[in-house]
Length: 317
Image 1: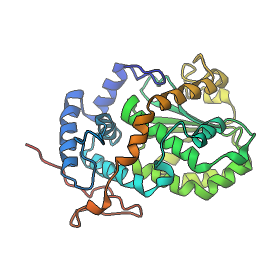
Image 2: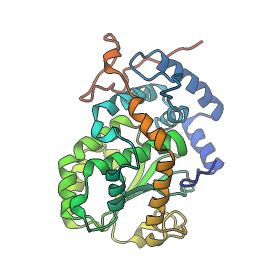
Image 3: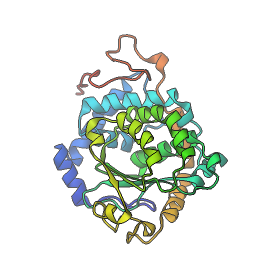
Image 4: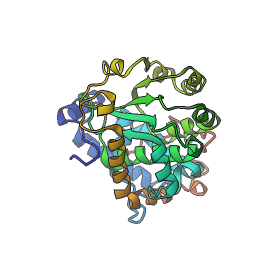
């Protein structure tokens, strides 16, 4: 199914992804039943049968796919996802895209999935500062909140992708941006990898200025080595096109997709507002730490979330 803002990969790409993961639609349907039954048995997690606080089945499916079809990892990541959210209200509360501060943030910065997937089924996501003006009005927490809203809506409602490819266009980045990011980036990166089963295929940086390098060094240090090895620094947009096909890139990036990045972000904002009620509801669909069993076989990190390997596979008749 195609939606206005995102076009899904072709069925052949999805079939190839399932083949690589050793699964199928039929197998995933069975696994979803097992995972939902497991959630019902966790008193601290949202109940997938709760009509008022519905846990999206598509989210569970995408978590399973992005966890490479590992039931153990999916359980861990679902537990982390619902536990991290109330631990970082500056990022995960007030998900109303019509709030003035979020509208302002979208005018100043851009974090948007591009409509066309790659031939292999990857989703390309573009980040840039939209202007060098009004930089003093840039609020880091509002920007990160929009990033999480965007990713959450994608995986729980709209997208089906193999992994993500990120383009970081730093042309309009200023020292003010760098200073703001340096003060806050560590928690945002940690929340990202705790709350979501991020699979990053590649990161492409363009228009990198020398004063940005200290920030990039910190971000890279927070990533696993296998991800940091997939970061490419390009001297020009033309060089970027050697990695990402022109049918994916907007017009102002030398692509043949018939819209500019500003038009793409405007359409994505329409998608956010169309899902306004759903986004607002996500604030209450979280874990209740007070109900976590004291004898639960989990290892907890600084966010109070479970670490990998702490669950045993659930057997369901």
